[in-house]
Length: 386
Image (tube, rainbow, N blue to C red):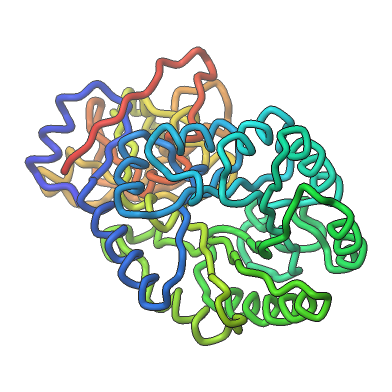
Protein backbone atom coordinates (compact mmCIF):
# COMPACT_ATOMS: atom_id res chain seq x y z
CA UNK A 1 0.00 0.00 0.00
CA UNK A 2 2.83 2.41 0.82
CA UNK A 3 5.29 3.34 -1.90
CA UNK A 4 8.64 4.90 -1.03
CA UNK A 5 7.39 8.28 -2.25
CA UNK A 6 4.26 7.99 -0.11
CA UNK A 7 6.32 7.12 2.97
CA UNK A 8 8.56 10.11 2.43
CA UNK A 9 5.52 12.34 2.04
CA UNK A 10 3.91 10.99 5.22
CA UNK A 11 7.12 11.74 7.12
CA UNK A 12 6.49 15.45 6.53
CA UNK A 13 3.25 15.49 8.52
CA UNK A 14 2.94 15.91 12.28
CA UNK A 15 1.98 12.59 13.84
CA UNK A 16 -0.27 10.97 14.80
CA UNK A 17 -2.78 11.25 11.95
CA UNK A 18 -5.23 9.19 9.95
CA UNK A 19 -4.22 8.48 6.37
CA UNK A 20 -6.83 7.54 3.78
CA UNK A 21 -6.05 6.03 0.39
CA UNK A 22 -9.08 7.20 -1.58
CA UNK A 23 -8.17 5.02 -4.56
CA UNK A 24 -8.73 1.94 -2.40
CA UNK A 25 -12.07 3.38 -1.28
CA UNK A 26 -13.09 4.18 -4.89
CA UNK A 27 -12.27 0.64 -6.00
CA UNK A 28 -14.08 -0.91 -3.03
CA UNK A 29 -17.22 1.14 -3.65
CA UNK A 30 -17.17 0.29 -7.34
CA UNK A 31 -17.10 -3.41 -6.47
CA UNK A 32 -19.91 -3.04 -3.91
CA UNK A 33 -22.08 -1.27 -6.48
CA UNK A 34 -21.24 -3.74 -9.25
CA UNK A 35 -21.96 -6.87 -7.20
CA UNK A 36 -25.08 -5.57 -5.42
CA UNK A 37 -26.63 -4.30 -8.65
CA UNK A 38 -26.49 -7.82 -10.10
CA UNK A 39 -29.42 -8.63 -7.82
CA UNK A 40 -30.93 -5.15 -7.52
CA UNK A 41 -29.93 -5.02 -3.83
CA UNK A 42 -29.97 -1.76 -1.87
CA UNK A 43 -26.85 -0.87 0.16
CA UNK A 44 -26.80 1.65 3.00
CA UNK A 45 -23.44 2.76 4.38
CA UNK A 46 -23.15 2.36 8.17
CA UNK A 47 -22.10 5.81 9.39
CA UNK A 48 -20.84 4.43 12.69
CA UNK A 49 -17.83 2.92 10.90
CA UNK A 50 -16.44 6.28 9.78
CA UNK A 51 -18.18 9.65 9.47
CA UNK A 52 -15.20 11.57 8.05
CA UNK A 53 -16.70 14.20 5.75
CA UNK A 54 -14.54 13.43 2.73
CA UNK A 55 -15.18 9.69 3.09
CA UNK A 56 -18.96 9.98 3.30
CA UNK A 57 -19.17 12.50 0.45
CA UNK A 58 -17.41 9.98 -1.80
CA UNK A 59 -19.77 7.22 -0.61
CA UNK A 60 -22.80 9.42 -1.23
CA UNK A 61 -21.59 10.18 -4.76
CA UNK A 62 -21.53 6.44 -5.47
CA UNK A 63 -25.27 6.30 -4.78
CA UNK A 64 -25.34 4.41 -1.47
CA UNK A 65 -27.89 5.15 1.23
CA UNK A 66 -27.11 5.85 4.89
CA UNK A 67 -27.53 3.64 7.94
CA UNK A 68 -27.56 5.86 11.04
CA UNK A 69 -27.63 5.06 14.74
CA UNK A 70 -28.02 8.56 16.18
CA UNK A 71 -29.84 11.74 15.38
CA UNK A 72 -26.55 13.48 14.67
CA UNK A 73 -25.66 10.79 12.15
CA UNK A 74 -29.01 11.38 10.44
CA UNK A 75 -28.28 15.11 10.40
CA UNK A 76 -24.71 14.54 9.16
CA UNK A 77 -26.01 12.35 6.34
CA UNK A 78 -28.55 14.92 5.19
CA UNK A 79 -26.06 17.79 5.42
CA UNK A 80 -23.64 15.84 3.24
CA UNK A 81 -25.98 15.04 0.41
CA UNK A 82 -27.75 11.80 1.32
CA UNK A 83 -31.40 11.83 0.29
CA UNK A 84 -33.84 11.45 3.19
CA UNK A 85 -35.53 8.59 1.37
CA UNK A 86 -32.26 6.63 1.49
CA UNK A 87 -31.74 7.03 5.26
CA UNK A 88 -32.57 4.36 7.83
CA UNK A 89 -32.37 5.12 11.56
CA UNK A 90 -31.51 2.24 13.88
CA UNK A 91 -30.42 1.95 17.51
CA UNK A 92 -31.90 0.71 20.78
CA UNK A 93 -31.98 4.13 22.47
CA UNK A 94 -33.31 6.81 20.13
CA UNK A 95 -34.29 9.83 22.21
CA UNK A 96 -37.30 12.05 21.52
CA UNK A 97 -35.30 14.87 19.93
CA UNK A 98 -33.61 12.43 17.55
CA UNK A 99 -36.92 10.83 16.57
CA UNK A 100 -38.58 14.21 16.06
CA UNK A 101 -35.74 15.39 13.83
CA UNK A 102 -35.83 12.22 11.72
CA UNK A 103 -39.62 12.54 11.41
CA UNK A 104 -39.27 16.14 10.29
CA UNK A 105 -36.86 15.02 7.55
CA UNK A 106 -39.19 12.27 6.31
CA UNK A 107 -36.52 9.57 6.42
CA UNK A 108 -37.08 6.25 4.70
CA UNK A 109 -37.45 4.06 7.78
CA UNK A 110 -36.97 3.67 11.53
CA UNK A 111 -35.55 0.27 12.51
CA UNK A 112 -37.43 -0.31 15.79
CA UNK A 113 -36.00 -2.48 18.52
CA UNK A 114 -38.67 -2.70 21.24
CA UNK A 115 -42.39 -2.58 21.90
CA UNK A 116 -41.98 0.61 23.90
CA UNK A 117 -40.14 2.29 21.01
CA UNK A 118 -43.07 1.58 18.69
CA UNK A 119 -45.39 3.37 21.08
CA UNK A 120 -43.11 6.40 21.40
CA UNK A 121 -42.56 6.80 17.65
CA UNK A 122 -46.32 6.52 17.11
CA UNK A 123 -46.95 9.20 19.73
CA UNK A 124 -44.34 11.60 18.35
CA UNK A 125 -45.40 11.02 14.74
CA UNK A 126 -48.95 11.79 15.74
CA UNK A 127 -47.91 15.16 17.14
CA UNK A 128 -46.40 15.97 13.73
CA UNK A 129 -49.49 14.59 11.98
CA UNK A 130 -47.34 12.04 10.16
CA UNK A 131 -47.16 8.30 9.65
CA UNK A 132 -43.69 6.91 10.27
CA UNK A 133 -42.43 3.99 8.20
CA UNK A 134 -40.86 1.36 10.43
CA UNK A 135 -39.08 -1.97 10.19
CA UNK A 136 -38.96 -4.33 13.13
CA UNK A 137 -35.42 -5.15 14.25
CA UNK A 138 -35.68 -8.89 14.82
CA UNK A 139 -33.39 -10.89 17.06
CA UNK A 140 -33.09 -14.11 15.02
CA UNK A 141 -30.94 -15.97 17.59
CA UNK A 142 -28.23 -16.67 15.00
CA UNK A 143 -24.70 -17.06 16.37
CA UNK A 144 -22.26 -15.00 14.28
CA UNK A 145 -19.22 -16.69 15.95
CA UNK A 146 -17.46 -13.38 16.43
CA UNK A 147 -16.22 -11.37 19.44
CA UNK A 148 -18.77 -11.25 22.28
CA UNK A 149 -18.80 -7.43 22.23
CA UNK A 150 -19.84 -7.29 18.56
CA UNK A 151 -22.32 -10.18 18.52
CA UNK A 152 -25.81 -8.73 18.19
CA UNK A 153 -28.14 -11.51 17.05
CA UNK A 154 -28.48 -13.74 20.13
CA UNK A 155 -31.37 -13.73 22.57
CA UNK A 156 -29.14 -12.45 25.40
CA UNK A 157 -28.08 -9.38 23.41
CA UNK A 158 -29.83 -6.05 24.01
CA UNK A 159 -30.76 -5.64 20.35
CA UNK A 160 -34.02 -6.41 18.63
CA UNK A 161 -37.42 -7.96 19.21
CA UNK A 162 -37.57 -11.64 20.10
CA UNK A 163 -39.89 -14.13 18.36
CA UNK A 164 -41.92 -14.74 21.53
CA UNK A 165 -42.98 -11.07 21.33
CA UNK A 166 -44.29 -11.26 17.76
CA UNK A 167 -48.00 -11.70 18.56
CA UNK A 168 -47.91 -8.82 21.04
CA UNK A 169 -46.11 -6.60 18.53
CA UNK A 170 -48.53 -7.41 15.71
CA UNK A 171 -51.58 -6.69 17.86
CA UNK A 172 -50.02 -3.40 18.97
CA UNK A 173 -49.13 -2.28 15.43
CA UNK A 174 -52.75 -2.76 14.37
CA UNK A 175 -53.74 -0.25 17.06
CA UNK A 176 -51.12 2.40 16.27
CA UNK A 177 -52.34 4.73 13.54
CA UNK A 178 -49.16 6.81 13.11
CA UNK A 179 -46.75 4.04 12.19
CA UNK A 180 -46.67 1.78 9.15
CA UNK A 181 -44.82 -1.51 9.18
CA UNK A 182 -42.91 -1.78 5.89
CA UNK A 183 -40.19 -4.30 6.69
CA UNK A 184 -38.09 -6.54 8.88
CA UNK A 185 -34.53 -5.74 9.95
CA UNK A 186 -31.81 -8.17 11.02
CA UNK A 187 -28.17 -7.76 12.06
CA UNK A 188 -26.32 -10.64 13.68
CA UNK A 189 -22.92 -9.08 14.42
CA UNK A 190 -19.71 -7.67 12.99
CA UNK A 191 -16.39 -8.93 11.61
CA UNK A 192 -17.94 -12.19 10.40
CA UNK A 193 -15.40 -13.91 8.15
CA UNK A 194 -17.31 -17.15 7.56
CA UNK A 195 -20.31 -16.93 5.22
CA UNK A 196 -22.15 -19.80 6.98
CA UNK A 197 -23.79 -17.51 9.60
CA UNK A 198 -25.24 -15.45 6.74
CA UNK A 199 -26.67 -18.62 5.19
CA UNK A 200 -28.20 -19.46 8.58
CA UNK A 201 -29.61 -15.95 8.76
CA UNK A 202 -31.28 -16.42 5.35
CA UNK A 203 -33.06 -19.51 6.62
CA UNK A 204 -34.34 -17.63 9.69
CA UNK A 205 -35.43 -14.69 7.53
CA UNK A 206 -37.45 -17.09 5.37
CA UNK A 207 -39.30 -18.43 8.43
CA UNK A 208 -39.99 -15.03 9.96
CA UNK A 209 -40.98 -13.44 6.66
CA UNK A 210 -43.48 -16.26 6.13
CA UNK A 211 -44.84 -15.82 9.67
CA UNK A 212 -45.59 -12.13 9.09
CA UNK A 213 -47.15 -12.90 5.71
CA UNK A 214 -49.54 -15.33 7.39
CA UNK A 215 -50.46 -12.56 9.81
CA UNK A 216 -51.43 -10.29 6.92
CA UNK A 217 -48.19 -8.35 6.40
CA UNK A 218 -46.78 -8.59 2.86
CA UNK A 219 -43.77 -6.41 3.65
CA UNK A 220 -41.87 -4.33 1.12
CA UNK A 221 -38.40 -4.47 2.71
CA UNK A 222 -36.13 -7.10 4.19
CA UNK A 223 -32.99 -5.58 5.70
CA UNK A 224 -30.26 -8.09 6.58
CA UNK A 225 -27.80 -5.59 8.08
CA UNK A 226 -24.11 -6.08 7.45
CA UNK A 227 -21.26 -7.53 9.45
CA UNK A 228 -19.08 -9.15 6.77
CA UNK A 229 -15.48 -9.12 7.97
CA UNK A 230 -12.15 -8.06 6.50
CA UNK A 231 -8.61 -9.47 6.50
CA UNK A 232 -6.80 -7.58 9.28
CA UNK A 233 -3.70 -9.77 9.02
CA UNK A 234 -3.03 -9.25 5.30
CA UNK A 235 -4.70 -5.96 4.33
CA UNK A 236 -2.86 -5.63 1.00
CA UNK A 237 -3.70 -9.17 -0.10
CA UNK A 238 -7.42 -8.66 0.50
CA UNK A 239 -7.90 -4.91 0.31
CA UNK A 240 -11.35 -5.56 -1.19
CA UNK A 241 -13.39 -8.42 0.22
CA UNK A 242 -15.17 -10.94 -1.98
CA UNK A 243 -18.44 -9.04 -2.32
CA UNK A 244 -19.48 -11.36 -5.16
CA UNK A 245 -19.50 -14.36 -2.80
CA UNK A 246 -21.15 -12.35 -0.02
CA UNK A 247 -24.12 -11.14 -2.07
CA UNK A 248 -24.44 -14.54 -3.81
CA UNK A 249 -25.14 -16.23 -0.46
CA UNK A 250 -28.25 -14.09 -0.06
CA UNK A 251 -29.30 -14.62 -3.66
CA UNK A 252 -28.94 -18.39 -3.22
CA UNK A 253 -30.55 -18.85 0.17
CA UNK A 254 -32.98 -16.06 0.93
CA UNK A 255 -36.55 -16.31 -0.34
CA UNK A 256 -38.24 -12.99 -1.02
CA UNK A 257 -41.83 -12.26 -1.87
CA UNK A 258 -42.52 -10.69 -5.29
CA UNK A 259 -41.49 -7.02 -5.24
CA UNK A 260 -39.72 -7.32 -1.86
CA UNK A 261 -36.49 -5.31 -1.69
CA UNK A 262 -33.36 -6.66 0.02
CA UNK A 263 -31.35 -4.03 1.90
CA UNK A 264 -27.86 -4.20 3.41
CA UNK A 265 -25.98 -2.01 5.91
CA UNK A 266 -22.26 -2.27 5.21
CA UNK A 267 -19.61 -0.28 7.05
CA UNK A 268 -16.31 -1.90 7.97
CA UNK A 269 -16.04 -3.83 4.71
CA UNK A 270 -16.27 -0.58 2.74
CA UNK A 271 -13.91 1.73 4.64
CA UNK A 272 -11.55 -0.29 6.85
CA UNK A 273 -8.80 -1.06 4.37
CA UNK A 274 -8.53 2.45 2.94
CA UNK A 275 -7.37 3.88 6.27
CA UNK A 276 -4.25 3.66 8.43
CA UNK A 277 -3.21 5.33 11.66
CA UNK A 278 0.24 6.85 11.14
CA UNK A 279 2.40 7.36 14.20
CA UNK A 280 5.99 7.99 15.20
CA UNK A 281 8.23 6.16 17.66
CA UNK A 282 8.93 8.30 20.72
CA UNK A 283 11.08 5.89 22.72
CA UNK A 284 12.47 2.38 22.70
CA UNK A 285 12.43 0.83 26.15
CA UNK A 286 14.36 -2.43 26.37
CA UNK A 287 13.76 -4.90 29.15
CA UNK A 288 14.89 -8.37 30.13
CA UNK A 289 11.72 -10.06 28.85
CA UNK A 290 10.04 -7.36 26.78
CA UNK A 291 11.09 -4.57 24.46
CA UNK A 292 8.67 -1.67 24.13
CA UNK A 293 8.18 0.63 21.15
CA UNK A 294 6.38 3.65 22.58
CA UNK A 295 4.41 5.60 19.96
CA UNK A 296 2.87 9.05 19.93
CA UNK A 297 -0.50 7.48 18.96
CA UNK A 298 -2.54 5.72 21.58
CA UNK A 299 -5.91 4.23 22.37
CA UNK A 300 -7.29 7.76 21.97
CA UNK A 301 -6.69 7.39 18.22
CA UNK A 302 -7.50 3.67 17.86
CA UNK A 303 -9.35 2.02 20.72
CA UNK A 304 -10.13 -1.34 19.11
CA UNK A 305 -7.07 -3.21 20.45
CA UNK A 306 -7.80 -2.02 24.00
CA UNK A 307 -11.57 -2.52 23.75
CA UNK A 308 -11.78 -5.78 21.78
CA UNK A 309 -8.21 -7.11 21.99
CA UNK A 310 -8.38 -6.61 18.21
CA UNK A 311 -5.47 -7.33 15.89
CA UNK A 312 -4.18 -4.66 13.52
CA UNK A 313 -1.14 -5.19 11.33
CA UNK A 314 1.71 -2.89 12.40
CA UNK A 315 4.42 -1.85 9.96
CA UNK A 316 7.64 0.15 10.36
CA UNK A 317 7.52 2.27 7.21
CA UNK A 318 10.93 3.85 7.79
CA UNK A 319 12.55 0.41 7.95
CA UNK A 320 10.72 -0.61 4.77
CA UNK A 321 12.49 2.14 2.80
CA UNK A 322 15.85 0.76 3.94
CA UNK A 323 14.76 -2.89 3.38
CA UNK A 324 15.70 -3.88 6.92
CA UNK A 325 14.99 -7.47 7.96
CA UNK A 326 12.28 -8.31 10.48
CA UNK A 327 14.33 -9.57 13.41
CA UNK A 328 12.97 -8.05 16.62
CA UNK A 329 9.86 -8.31 18.80
CA UNK A 330 8.25 -5.33 20.48
CA UNK A 331 5.22 -4.58 22.54
CA UNK A 332 3.89 -1.61 20.57
CA UNK A 333 2.24 0.76 23.02
CA UNK A 334 0.92 4.30 23.25
CA UNK A 335 1.46 7.20 25.68
CA UNK A 336 -1.92 7.05 27.47
CA UNK A 337 -1.91 6.47 31.22
CA UNK A 338 -3.63 3.09 30.95
CA UNK A 339 -2.01 -0.34 30.89
CA UNK A 340 -4.49 -1.35 28.20
CA UNK A 341 -3.01 1.27 25.84
CA UNK A 342 -1.31 -1.36 23.72
CA UNK A 343 -1.59 -1.93 19.96
CA UNK A 344 0.11 -5.31 19.92
CA UNK A 345 2.33 -7.62 21.97
CA UNK A 346 5.46 -9.33 20.66
CA UNK A 347 5.00 -7.67 17.28
CA UNK A 348 7.66 -8.78 14.81
CA UNK A 349 9.37 -5.72 13.29
CA UNK A 350 12.76 -4.67 11.95
CA UNK A 351 15.02 -3.03 14.50
CA UNK A 352 13.01 0.04 15.43
CA UNK A 353 14.36 3.42 16.48
CA UNK A 354 13.17 6.76 17.76
CA UNK A 355 11.59 8.77 14.96
CA UNK A 356 10.61 5.78 12.81
CA UNK A 357 7.24 6.13 11.07
CA UNK A 358 4.76 3.39 12.03
CA UNK A 359 1.58 2.46 10.19
CA UNK A 360 -1.26 0.69 12.00
CA UNK A 361 -3.29 -0.77 9.19
CA UNK A 362 -7.01 -1.34 8.54
CA UNK A 363 -7.94 1.65 10.69
CA UNK A 364 -10.46 3.16 8.29
CA UNK A 365 -13.31 1.64 10.31
CA UNK A 366 -13.79 2.36 14.01
CA UNK A 367 -10.60 4.41 14.19
CA UNK A 368 -11.18 8.11 13.74
CA UNK A 369 -14.88 7.79 14.54
CA UNK A 370 -14.18 6.31 18.00
CA UNK A 371 -11.32 8.66 18.86
CA UNK A 372 -11.34 10.75 22.03
CA UNK A 373 -9.39 13.49 23.74
CA UNK A 374 -8.80 11.51 26.93
CA UNK A 375 -5.71 12.85 28.75
CA UNK A 376 -6.53 16.14 26.95
CA UNK A 377 -4.91 14.83 23.81
CA UNK A 378 -4.70 17.05 20.74
CA UNK A 379 -7.27 16.54 17.99
CA UNK A 380 -5.94 14.18 15.33
CA UNK A 381 -5.85 15.32 11.73
CA UNK A 382 -6.55 13.37 8.55
CA UNK A 383 -4.67 13.31 5.25
CA UNK A 384 -5.66 11.76 1.93
CA UNK A 385 -4.16 10.42 -1.26
CA UNK A 386 -6.11 10.17 -4.49
